[in-house]
Length: 73
Image (cartoon, rainbow, N blue to C red; front, side, top):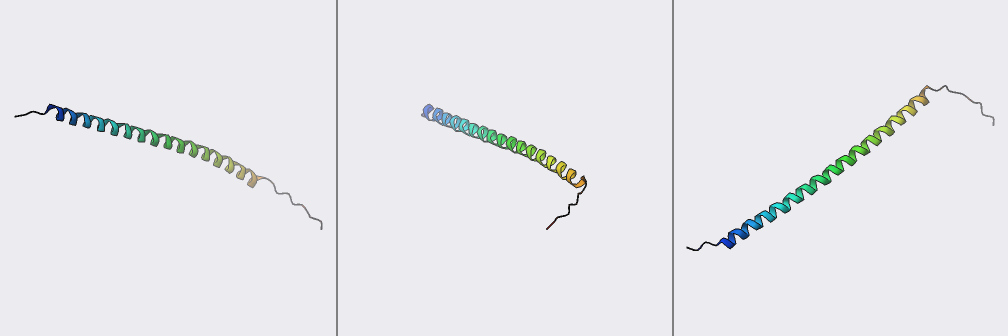
């Protein structure tokens, strides 16, 4: 009976290499996803701030007194 240690060790090494590469790939994808979600949150906050300012302007314009001018032709 011949025990082939070399092939067994080679298979274990291939398994470890593939597992490590998959680990790095998943880690990289998670990092990209986190960056994207953070950027979307920042954009949403900026959009909310702009919307808040626009609503304040609208409210100020609605509440101002109307001055009628007669136009001469």
